[in-house]
Image (tube, rainbow, N blue to C red):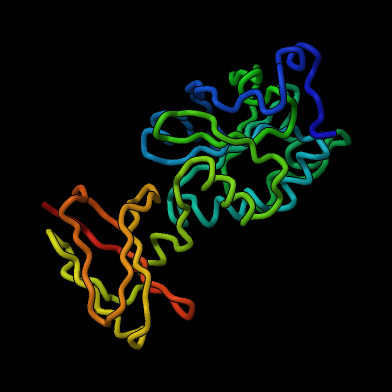
Length: 268
C-alpha cells in the first residue's frame, strides 16, 4: 500500500495520487518544539529557499521507514542552513492527538523516538493549522517539495529513502541545482583560482591545478541555479560576468580528476 490513509474525511478529499502536485502552497505560520516560529513564505520561499514539508505521524510505519533512512536528515545537513543553505526541511506531525511522549518514543502507540538525531524542526500542534487536504491528500507520509519562484508544490518524495534520490528528484522538479559543496565549506577551504574578487566585467580563472587538461567551469547563483558554463582548454581562462546581477556566486571548475570551488562577488 502506498501510504497509510488518513481518516475518512481527509481520504475523501483526495482525488488522485499526488493530488497536491501543481497546487500553490498556502502560506502558514507554525511554531516548532523549540519555540521557533516558521513562516513558509517569509522565512523560506521569499528567501529563495526550497521548502521540504514532511507530514507524517508517529504511529505510521512508512513514515518511520522514511525517518530512519535519514534521507531527510542528510538532505537538511547537506543543503540546509549548515550546508549549501538552499532549502529548509520541516517535520509536521499530522495527527493532532500526538503527544510529546509519542515523539520521544515512550508510548505504545509510536514507532520510536522521532527527536533523536533529527536536525530539522519538528512541529506538533493541536488543533492542526495545516490543511491536510493540501499537505497530505493521500495519507502519511507526504513530503511536499515547494519551489520558491512560484510557490508551487512540484513533487512528493515520500518514498525516496536515500539522499541522492532526494537530490535528483528535487533538482528535476524545481530546476534548481542543489550544490554538492556547502557555502561554509567553500569559504573556509577554497583555493583562490578566480580573480579579481569582486569582479565587474571579466572573471579570470587560473586553472594551473588541472595541469593543462580540459576543464568545465560552472557558475551558480546563491539559489543554486546554473547561470554560466565555460569549457576551458588552457590554464588561463575567463568568464564574462557583465550580465550577472550584483551578488555572490559559486564558481566550480572540475574535470574527471578534481574539482575546485570558490565564492566570488560580482559588483557593477
